[in-house]
Image (cartoon, rainbow, N blue to C red; front, top):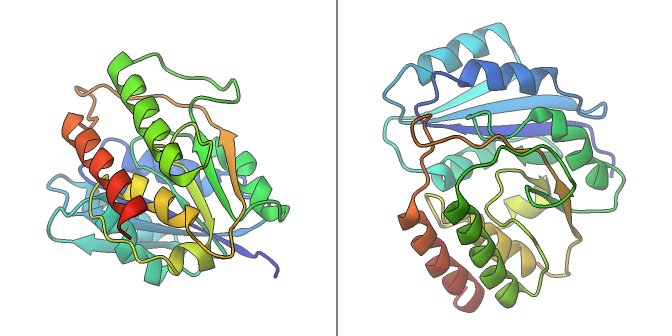
Length: 237
């Protein structure tokens, strides 16, 4: 089946300082000739994010908006956007500028070349540029990835990565349950269980992490929830 369109999902919560720039970078990105569809999911922001998204959408016919009056989390935002997605490939892009759309071509290439059905970006392979930040975040991610791999029998290096790409039919057939950051280990567990087995690739990406002062939102509580989700969705779903 030919691939004609890429849908980029951008969950957004209180990102008035970065939203316009990230959408500009997404719209300018090389998508290997595929048409772009951009869906911004404003997850109950209490700053100007929704107004900025509306202004962007008015100027760009291929940008849609989904608005939630209440903050429900990244997983909830993705679940709301999937039924509205019309692309052959679906890509998840955070709104905070930590991940660069310049990486789109290398992320898309395995799917476009029919080598992969799912591609995960990794901050820990490939020799790309990385901002040096929190040791405990890095260690925590490696522990979570190791635990996930034990259950899934995959050899991923970064399950908490923002960049996850799917042939749309695969992510749409998965029943997503997690509303917040637990979505990340949940989707890895459920992708690993698809039958017949699908082809999963990992591609190195650049990363410019934010500090908490700059707006980083994930905390140690999300790490605890991730452990729970790894066990739950690998053993009991």
